[in-house]
Length: 406
Image (cartoon, rainbow, N blue to C red; front, side, top):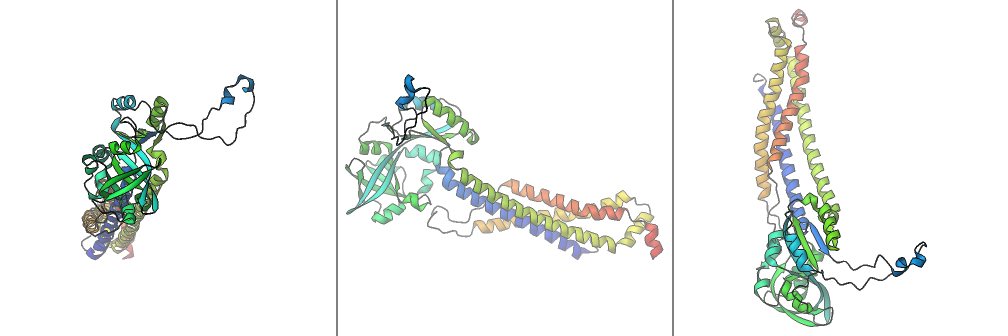
């Protein structure tokens, strides 16, 4: 191994480069996935309880004994006169608070409004929230790019407006804007902050105020709530628990898996591609080690013959070449982990400036220890396999034939 140190070094460098790129690629791709997931999943409740306006499923004719054995065809069914308000809100909250499967509960109130801009009205939505609970469960503060998120609770008749909407209205912090409710009532609110989700279409319409402020805007009582957002201790149980709550409370319930099915598929595909590329790099490095050890055997035929003639068994010769392969894998793998960490840190310090995600300042990198473990494990496996076949060939060399040929 040391006699042909240049060949050995080339093999080790191949492993080092493959492991380093494997670690860097996985760290960067999964950091990117985490960032994209946070834009959607951190803002999405595990379970969303609400009342959906929809046509009545059971029509009066279906309750008639005269037509119970008939097929009834009804067209142009209009939605029922049901309200968006969640009935028995207090008792539902009490039941949820006693459920140990739940991590947190965030009540919410949504109001459709128009932002008044001179003679122009812009469509908008004001979300009434408890900012402390919203920040605990959904990291609300990370999306407030200017101002203090607690101001909507501490300052009466205040609003945190979407940055895109604020730009349209030229609304600065401290300005008073005017909105019109769906019933035509005019309300003035003080701008105390900007909200930016990273999704332009959302930031054009959505704003946030305290639940009390939105209840006052709509002229409703303190028990008027239209949505309940829930975070569970176990995300994977969301579909089952959502069905249970929907039946128990007679409400519509949407779980996070259903709401973000396409997004989760995209994250899985990106991770799969990064793993595939990284493993391909390791396999290519393994072929390089195989070729080098194979050539080494042909060059060391005399030495192998002498070893076997002096008493070395085929198993011992086999172990020598496997040891060479593993040594290359260990040395190359350790340096690969080190360089992979260095490359990841360099990427982590590269500025990432975008108006869509102002809270992200540098490129995202995931430093999960499992990527390093997988990298060194694959390095050991590929170098072992790359050394095994040449070693097996070396162990079967007949010393008599080699010496006679000389």
